Length: 354
Ligand SMILES: NC(=O)c1ccc[n+]([C@@H]2O[C@H](COP(=O)([O-])OP(=O)(O)OC[C@H]3O[C@@H](n4cnc5c(N)ncnc54)[C@H](OP(=O)(O)O)[C@@H]3O)[C@@H](O)[C@H]2O)c1
Picture 1: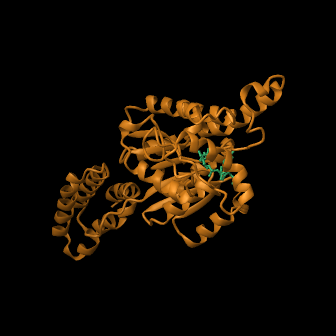
Picture 2: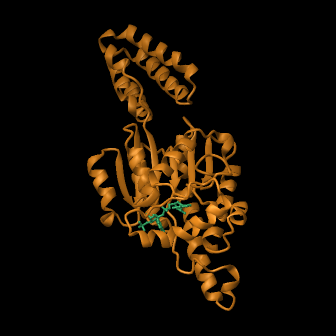
């Protein structure tokens, strides 16, 4: 009894979404139980590689199992639904909240929304109360113990795996955004402070987050391509800065260029694994539509003028978070391991940044 129960339990954990199939085997003689469990596990792993040619393997396994135990037909034929797990940082508002709304609308996703302050994340908590597949967790991405606790919570829900990590949270303080580099001359303390603040969150915070979630991503990568998507910015692209004539908001741009390089380093390090690391710009997105027009003009007006000059074909209207998220997720869905280490726009190229 113990001899077959133990492997059954282990396999149940591996194939938790198909536990019904495994439990159905319990009524069979031990030798056949073991055979079906092994076949089930093997086919589960093969199919998860996204190779539809392997579907007949699964069908055959089930057909043979049916031959053994016809009464359980219905359970054996129930379709396999593989939950895809997502962690999104900075999910409280803006593009991050857009990711949570869109991703959680698909019941096959399980979505972990990371916020700096759970108690005040009203929109996220509302969504969590309505949708079973949303989990709101608290972590500042500069806080390693908090990130570790969150990773543990994710592990408890997914059984130790994570399919997609979206590093979206960022430090976007606009005090001195108008400063060009030489304006820091004689204000070296402020130069250090500004660069450290942006670097701490946008570069180091992302690296710390990736390192902590890496074991879960690597485990998920055994069955399907695991993805780390870092929401960067065209501000981190050298050509874009020159073309759009953006000589200000320097510490932000440098922190994003640095995180792009960090992603390329991860891609290089893990090139032989089923892991993808990508920097992706979300486009020019108005996340302040609930604010008075003057506030929106102040935040987006200058950029819009520069972009219109550099890109005369541009519509002149920033994207909504929904439009940006739809484009980003469409691009992400088409990625292959060959894209690892790239820096792309929301449209999947390195040209149409806005
Ligand atoms: N909007 C654009 O046009 C645009 C363009 C290019 C790139 N991006 C990038 O897109 C991403 C989202 O931007 P957004 O426009 O949606 O910005 P946003 O509305 O200002 O949201 C930023 C989010 O990051 C969170 N955050 C800030 N510091 C954090 C930290 N230390 N730890 C964890 N979370 C932190 C914020 O948390 P709180 O809610 O607690 O403050 C907030 O939820 C950013 O990476 C940004 O650089 C945006």
